[in-house]
Length: 206
Image (cartoon, rainbow, N blue to C red; front, side, top):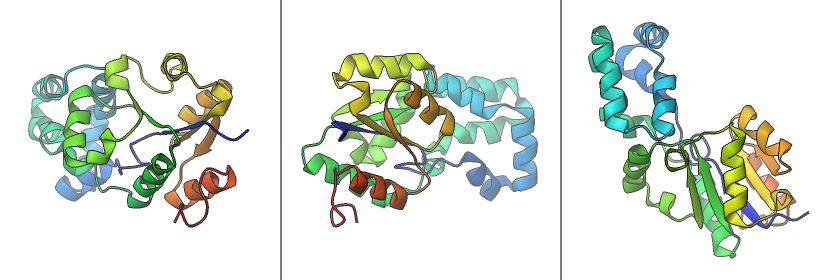
């Protein structure tokens, strides 16, 4: 079945998201390992993705871990440096789909304030026909509720949705709901998938 709408994850699909890489460059791998071993920064970020306030959540975590206060605050104060660089080919694919009138949605684990910050640096994040941002939805991938909310809102049958994400657990739940999926490992493979499904031709997917 030819897809009727395409859904993009954002982190590691449109924008690289590698916090460990950022911290390695700032404090060194050894201290980064110690930090991440002492403080569950990814769980802190999950709280933000569920709609908790970005600044309050990060700063509270920093105050609760005074030995790492400065490093934890970097998650907030230098966040845009972690959410970089843009994956340009993926952005071109998104814009090529929209240019052909194909509905394009986002489905992303992203905080409310951190998404607004990202969009101020990356305006293409505001180009989606329907944005599904976990912070506003109060649920995150791979919880089934967030997929159900997309289905109920977008009006497209699950089997007519084509979804790409870089995480296998997120893809697995989408598959279980009947969505067409592509595990994102790079923009070239995603471009090939869009050509195979007949949504773009080779020139449009370049």
